[in-house]
Image (cartoon, rainbow, N blue to C red; front, side, top):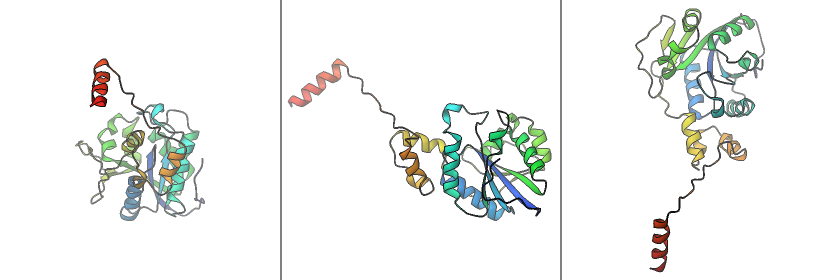
Length: 224
């Protein structure tokens, strides 16, 4: 497992696990992690970059090594943020319950809290062994557009009050870049430029359908 900038010690630490595909990482991810690290009494945030989400298709994802590269470029040497690749070594598909249990075994000196958006909380009942997850680990829920519809509560789950609702999403960035939009200010410095260099989200070329009617109109307009 790769855990950047983290030397294992016997010091007790409260770790927030921010799991996601980060496809690609954007300023919303970092803003959420920043807020939670400062206002939720956590010592560190570990960005758990997933190789494949069981609820997503592989075709939607950039290569996981590339996503890790962009994430590490984004967080730099900020001491409260780490990247974690533990799921890359686990059987596929990976499930959050199994991942947190493995982290607990590997780092028994730490406590682990799952950080998820309210949209994911709405579908928590679809997660594998979600009852085991909620029983054994605390969960922090941050507001997300379209989330907050579920009335389900659990004593180990807490909604983060006062957290800003981030409207940016990776899917919005992917779609916009495929349409040729310049999205550089939605991502940390250097990420947009790297995506462009690698042609990560090629611009979709829409072919114009030529019909006799459009050809006639073109000719008439030209003559005029």
